[in-house]
Image 1 (cartoon, rainbow, N blue to C red):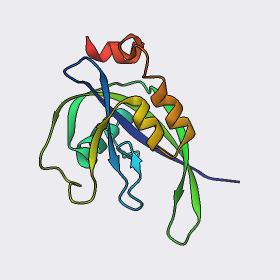
Image 2: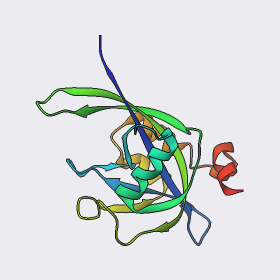
Image 3: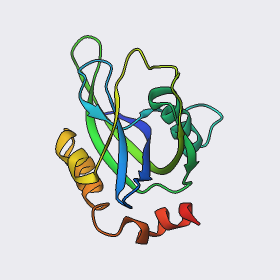
Length: 150
């Protein structure tokens, strides 16, 4: 039997001054690759609330998070000792209102805004890349995102 790790992630987004969608990515602490703010589910917290906390701790992002996942992706999380745990990550869309200059993991990570297409090229997970690419055309028409905008 293989175990599956359950994680949650925030997909922080904003529109730039030219009306183009940008997604906020952070570097992972171990390899420095570009990822979304994510982590394990938290006892006593709804999954989207946990994702909102991860966005604040890992990226300093504050805003409105959706209560329904916009997608799911899988990846192998490297464990101490060299084994990998297959993780399923539920992704919640988040419209960013503000970025803190001073946040919990600022000394451990970098953050950067990307177009969805540029972000899709930088992530290692094919399913996450596909999810990001769905945001390239008319993201404001995706029901879960338009609900956050209203």
